[in-house]
Amino acid sequence: MAKTPAKQNKQPGIEAKMQPAPEYIKDSYRASGKLSGKIALITGGDSGIGRAVSVHFAREGADLAIVYLDEDVDAKETQSLVEAFGRKCLLIKGDVKKADFCKKAVKKVVGEYGKLNVLVNNAGMQFPQKNVKAIDPEQLDTTFRTNIFAYFYFAEAAMDYMKAGDCIINTSSVTAYRSSPSLIDYSSTKGAITTFTRSLATNLVEKQIRVNAVAPGPVWTPLIVSSFDEKKIKDFGNETAMKRAGQPSELGPAYVFLASDDASFITGQVIHINGGEVVNG
Ligand code: NAD
Image (cartoon, rainbow, N blue to C red):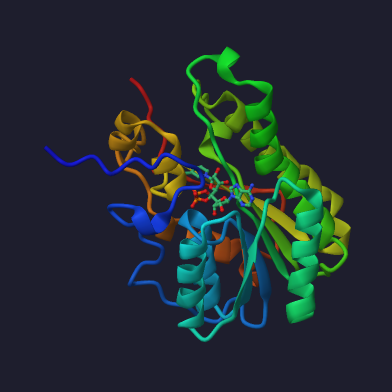
């Protein structure tokens, strides 16, 4: 019988401890300078989907700043992966639940690089509960502050610096589009992110700042091994039409597309990367 990958007991999880290790970029990926000269800030950029975005952006010529809570090992690894492509990677450690921290992080990026072209709102947490009554006020507060309030904080702070041609990309989730009985609060924040994306997009259209989102299905990341129980980890991804979880490497190229000029006529939209929907009957 196949061995169940190890569960971690604390969020955020640590990518360096994951077995099997997630794949953050495919060997077959070919870059073409799509983000050359751009400066990008990626929240949750140290691991999982955020690491894949960081590495793809660096391959495409962007210099980066990544925000993370406390996973220094993962952040340093992502920094060295980015630097290996000759790009810069500023590490900013702190809590995105705090508006003041988010504002200072954006200022730090502009202080370092002189501008900010791409904001990727991606940090997130989830706390599965079988019973709605188990979602206590503290959990509700943490989930909403981390997953959606912070997206507002960063977008608001970025407005002082973003110009025509710049863009915001938010990480939503498949759980915003189908029911998720054990993630009621989490899926609610993801629904909010989708709506935030649409409304902010039309609000910023005159400034020529595009706002889009990616809605991942099950993806093999630290979030999964640090939040789900062993059975869910073992079966993770089996619910998709492809009957497998995705790898972060399968998400990174969509963020590149949305960040680049190739997506110049796209705003307020969501790209769904989820292994296909299961149709019964
Ligand atoms: P991950 O654990 O690698 O990333 C989560 C990141 O959020 C970490 O880098 C962590 O530092 C950061 N973070 C969490 N709380 C924070 C806080 N208070 N302050 C600062 N940073 C904080 O996992 P991931 O799966 O790559 O998650 C990235 C995004 O993808 C999340 O928004 C998640 O909801 C979304 N998503 C993931 C899946 C999946 O199956 N993995 C599916 C749908 C959506």
